[in-house]
Amino acid sequence: MTQQPTMRALLQREIAQQERFIKEKLTSLLIPFKKSLHFRVSKAYTTFSVKLKKPLSIKELLRIEQAFPPGYMVLSNSFLGEMTQHQFIEIRIPNQSSHFFHLQELLSYFCLRKTKGILPIILGLDDRDLYSIDLATSKHIAIESDLPSYRYKLQQLFLHSLLTPNNHKWVQIAWIEEPLEHTKLRSRIAPFMLTEATQAQEVLPLVIKENEKRKTENTFDTRWIIFVSDAYASYHQHKDLFNALEDSQAQGIHLIGTSECLDKDTITVKDIMEYNSLFSPSLWMDTEGRLHHERSIIQLPFFTEETVIPFEFYQLLDKRINEILGRTEMNLFGKSMDFQQVQRTLSSEINRYHLRSSDGRITLSLSAIRSTLDHMHQKLFYDMIERLSKNIYYFVGETSEKLTNLKELRIEPESGQVLINDKVAYTSTSEGGLVPLIVQSIYDLTLHAVPQTVTTLDQLDEATYPQLHLVTEALQRGEAYKEIAPRTTPIALISEIEDVLSKAKFQLTSKKEVGENTSPIHKNKHILEGIDELPNKDFAFKLLEFMRDYGLLENNLITLTDVQACKNLGHTFPILLEADGENSSKDNSGRDRYYPNDLFKYNGKEYYVTNDWYEKTKEKSSNRDNRTRFLEWIKSLLNK
Image (cartoon, rainbow, N blue to C red; front, side, top):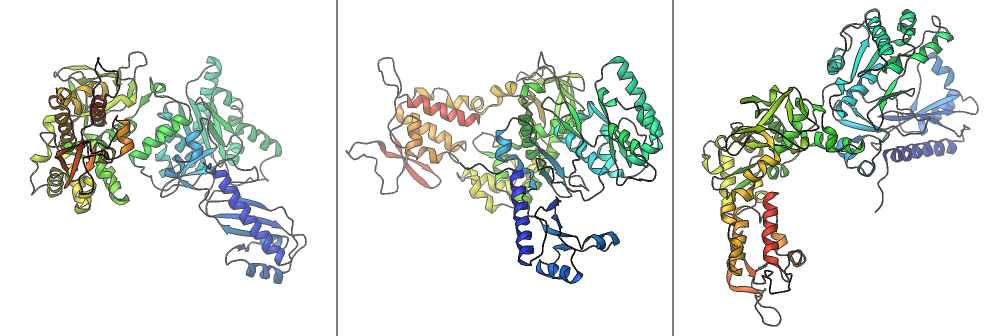
């Protein structure tokens, strides 16, 4: 299988094609130029600087401009630009999307699925979506920003906070700048702020005091990041205060300086050297979660408004980041989760919920509904799931609390006990009592819908719930949901589902606690009891009817009619054979391989049922125990 190229390879390939195009065009025009082109990359363009071997006249420059597509050649209106463009020309070529990837593409990429190390990739936001940029580029490639650089340092920390749970508990920041500047950006990083002060004369004494304290104690728990807008000017104005922090990096205090220009008239070379020994423009994390800094500037796409990422993408992102960092579920012990992180985890449990009839014969899976929706309606679906997730309850002692009251959830490393807001969380038992909530990991948390609060499908009246009534009637006729979906109105159906489930009470519990009491096998135990003692024919028809009534045939009919799949279940012939007039219950030797007079009906079709059933006994050496294998397969489908 061909390995998919990395983002770096795609970027380099595109730049090489652009460079070749420029060289071929200039060569065809007989323009003498240096063969080494310098370029910089932005999201929209790659701009190439071409050094000419001799100055060109205005007439020759116009000839070059006309040879390239409109807008490719950049003409400067500045005095300095006009002086240099006779010796240098700039060609700006629009980029393709090869080195900017959506999150969905990033998570499915080969290099992310296979690697265990940290990749040279950083995530960024624009005003519409989440993107990634490959930073593993050659040293002469710069990722050019569209806005002043100091904004990007803040975004870097903000994006880092997306990837690391509760990062603000061990990374805090201060921001030295003019007050009330960039309030939108400041609101995004509010959880990280160690002080609301923004003036150097207020912030720096606080930082110096903390630095001295850490020196004395020779330890620290929280890293402090001090962002300084217009850092050259600030350093020149408060040089003594800044110089007092010369060794602050060893104490976990990092100065991040950003500046648009250097005033050469007011700062000396010595000042510049001292400045560079203090400020580091970017941060990065190692495989053990430690924070580091480096001198090379990393800049990201800008964002203007908060981008809402659907819950399933959050889950994929969390899972992928854990894999990249080599974390396991057990690493989550002792680490706390806030409301949004818990909400994301539990929302997926609601997404897997099934609406049922009172007798359990009809089931309607929310995930089956979601799979038939287009992109716009899927967004409405996930908005509904997000709202429903606020209707989750948990117990602290005998008091019922809403999930929205949760500020912190933590799992004790030794006992596995769940603590919510530093209090022991409880879950209800099948007998009605309460026991402490104990899990192996965050992924063992699940939801239990209190039966008395859930309205079943057959209790919904047609006038109030016309869409759900339509679906229920079709399911009762044996139709699969994907066949029903085109007859529904998605927005109305989503609205009706939300109305039904908003009245349900979802309780936080563990999968182990819920497992036996609420599993389909447990609920239908009275139907499955004694079925393995029936004669072959009754055994087969009873289980096939069970699969039909409980919606298991919808996705598994193809298994029962496929020769190879049935061999995996211990059968020589398909378990079901369509009675279409061409097929026969007999094999080529004239022996009956199917029950000839009794047909199984499903979705308007009739099927022969195999009579090829065996059960392992002590007297026989045969291992073709396909009865037990078939029954266990059905139980596994129920569990799923």
